[in-house]
Length: 362
Image (cartoon, rainbow, N blue to C red; front, side, top):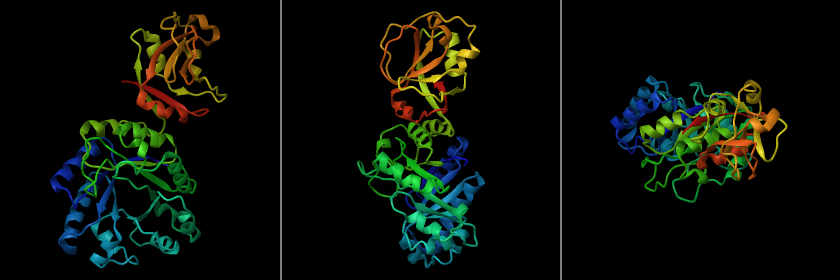
C-alpha cells in the first residue's frame, strides 16, 4: 500500500492565513493528507460551513486528502444524521473520523455512503471492534484506521500495546495511520499540549526518527504530525524520510576512505537471510569491490552496537563486506568506518532477514 505523510490543523483555534501558509509549506515537502479537527462549531452551521469549506478547497488545490475529526456533539449541534453524511460532502471532506463506536452494522453501512467518504476508525483499543464491522460486510476500501494522539505527558500508548492494536487493522488489509509530534508545535485540540504523539516513546523523539520508526514497524501506512505548526526544518526532515525502507543517519569516521564511503553511502544494502546475532551483514558489496585494496585502520577498538564496519585487507574473502554491529566485540580485521546516530538505534531490531536498508551521512 502506498504510504503518505500528513499534517494536522485546528481551524477552531487557528488563524486561516497561518493554516494556508502551513499547508503550502508542507505540500512542498511531500505531505499529502490532513487530519482536520472539527470539535467545536462557533457561530452556527453557516459559519462552520464557510470556514471549513474554504480551507478544505484550498487543501484540495494543493493535492491533499482531508479527513475531518468529528466529535459526536457536532452531529447534534449541526443537525447532522449518521444516516446522511451529505453535510461533510458539502464541506468537501474526503472522509470523517469516528470517535464513537456503534454496533458494527452502522459503521459498515456508513462505508457505503453515496458520497464516497472514507470512514476512519479509532485504532487505539485492543478489542475486536474492526472484526465486528467487517463481519457486516463493510466496504473495505472506504474503511480506514487511525490511532489517537495523547496531549498529556505519560499517557501515550506503550509500544507492545500499539503493536497489538495495529495488527488488528493491518492484518485485515486496512489503511492505517498514527501520529508523531513536532518540537515546535504548540497548537492542538486542547489547552494541554505536551506534544501529540500516538506512542509515548515518541514524545520527545525527533519527528523524522519517530516517522522512520512507525514505517519500520510495517504496521502504519500514513504518518501524521499531530501538533501544529511544525517548523520548515522539521517538515523537510520528515518529508525526506524513506517510507519504504529504513535509511539510517550515520556519522562517518574521519579516517574512512573514499572506497569505504562509497560502500556505506552509495550502495543498496540487504541483510543476509541466514542472520547472525553479532552483526547485520551486507555481503553483495564485497563481491562488487573484491578487487579494491582496503588497508587496516580504526581496527583496534571494541566495537559497539550501531557501529558500521568494513572488512579490511586482512579479512580474506570477507574483505569489503559491510557489517552493522549488534553485540560488542573486537576484531582487527574490521575497520570501523562510522556509527548510526544514537537516536536511531531503536530502528536496528527492524532489520530482519532480507531487509533492505541504506545510509545517509549526517
